[in-house]
Each structure stands twice: as C-alpha cells, then as structure tokens.
Image (tube, rainbow, N blue to C red; front, side):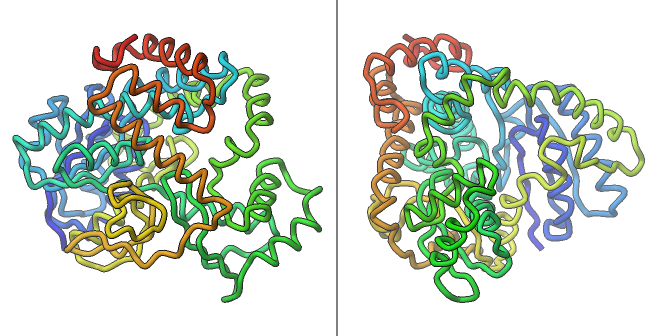
Length: 431
C-alpha cells in the first residue's frame, strides 16, 4: 500500500472533516502515511485534527495526523498536496455572486465574472504554494480541488514545473440529471464526457449499449410539461444540442431566465450556505471530543465523503491500480480534437504509477464545440491574468467569457470586484 506524506491545504475548512472521513474510509490504501493539515484558522484546524486523530484510533488505522498554520513547514518533504481552499471564504463568494447581478450579469461561483475573480484569488495563493514546493518539496504533486479547478490547473501547468492534476465529479454526476429527467435508469447508461471543467459534454452516450439520443427525444416530447425547471432545462438542452451537457451550461443557454431568478432571490447561494456554517462547526466541535466520532451527513458540509474522487486518483496513482477516472490535465498529444495541447481539458484517464493517461477521445459535436472552445480560451486568459497579468489582461479575459459581452460593463465589473477583493489580490491587479 502507498506510504506517503500528504499535505491538505484547506485542512480547517468546513469540508475538511468530511474529507478526512473519506480519506480514512480508504485508510488501508495509505497505510503508514502521514497527513499534515494546513490552514489559516488555528481553532478550526485543531477541531479537524482532533476528529481525524480520534477516527484513526477508533478505526485502528496506521496513519498519523498533524496540523499547522505554517504553510511552508507543513509542505516540507511532502509527496502530495491535496488543495481545497477558498481565499476569502464564503464572504468572498457572496461578493462574486452579488456584484455581477448589479451589472445585469449572472453571479456564480465558477462561471463568468464570479468564477474569474475566484480564480484570481486562488491562483495568487497557489503561486506561493508552487514557490514553497520548489524549495521544500521539489518532487511533490498537487491534487487540486480548489476552484475554478480548470483555471488553477491551467495557471500552474502553464507557468510552473510543479505537476498538478485537478478533479471534479462533474463527468460522473451530470449525466444522471438528464437520464433521470427522461425517466430512464442511470445504471443502464454509459456516458463519456469531455471538455473543460464544469463545461463538458457527452461525446458518447449509450443506453443498454445503444445510442441514447432517440430515447431522450421521445422522453422530451412525452415529459416536458411534467418536469421541474432544472430537469426540464437539462433534457431540453441535451435533445437540442444532441449531447448531454454539464449543468453549468444552463447559465449560458438559459441566461435571461436564470438571471431573473437571481435578481428576484432574497439571498445568493453563498449567503444561504453561510446561514448553515455555524451549525456545521457546532457538530464538528461535538465530535472532536468523542471517543468514536461519527459525522452526521445532514450536519456536515458536503456530507461525509468529500473529495473522494481526489482520494481515488491519489490511490490509483500511488498504488498503481490503473483505475479509469475523470481528470483535468493538459491535452497531451491533442487527444481531444479542437483544443491546443497546452490547454487543460477534462477527460477520462487511466491512472497508474506512471501518471495520467488520456484515453482515446471522440470529438465534441460541432453543435457544442464553439462555446466549449470559447470557454477554454477564457480559461487561458484568466490563468495568464492570475499568474502575472494586469487589469488590461483581466478585461480581455472577462470579454472572452460568454456571459460578458460589453466592454463598458467589463471595465466597471472588473474595477468594482477587484476593489472588493483587494485584500486577496496582488497590487498589479488592482484598479
């Protein structure tokens, strides 16, 4: 079994307890390993450390856990870095969601202007992490869950030599939304998706071994007036485009409808989550003193199996299993047609000790290729801005995003959001 030293950036986050429960679920696969929790919040960090240590003891696992607020010290001599943090917390996310709405543009965590400014904050931190790793753990790999994962990976791979792969459950969880909307059984379907993170489409979709599209078209005609709004959008978009979409394409193809919903809502998604966060920590504090901690999925942020895909990828790599998993990484050899080799794409891979091997890819349909390429170009421009860019680069990036198509609005949005996030941005990006 793999014996590694793993640093967890974001080890004091509201998702960290569930992530540790998930890692310990696979604990035997990492026997003898050391986990270092790293976070800026010492109180939350200690709660997660205590829960983890007590779960390790209760489960009889051969693992050790420590915690530190000193990032460089925590990264020293690590083999792997699990990255999942949110610079500025939910308060910053609320600004990402709220400010664009004022300008008549959808506000969202990973899409449009909100996703762009989250990427600037995330890349600013990861740039420092890369510098630390080069000095104290030059052989380490980053397994990234910090959003937007595609832009973060694009920046680190394009501007550094530190290996990074990013994960997201999207290619696994998006198809069932459409399949269930059609009244079909997801267990009987085989769907392969590709594209860029949060913006992927199916390149092959089979049901009992046959093309699923005729079944989706029939279901649309029979069920379209019976579906809830999200299911209706998903099924309609799949049938119209001839490809099963990521849920996030609703923001582009149902833009005005979703913008009106956001404008009429009393709270943004982040503001709703913030109401629940104190309750999560009350639960974690309770469990941090229990002999046998038991996390309640209803009282834990994201449940009790957080970041499990990242853990699966790490286990496949360090234990040389050859598992087939979806990963975000550069488009080596132009495996996904229509995208440069340096562009980070989301594709299914075989993962073993030698790395991450992209399986042969079918092309995206022409009906969906254009918007996916545009989002990939936005990703590249956003990565450039976050790593070494200026306000001008940021304006270019915003204008490349399909949600922003007006120069005056882009300039006003950039300046207002950069000022709001000034504490988490380098001076070169400030207005």
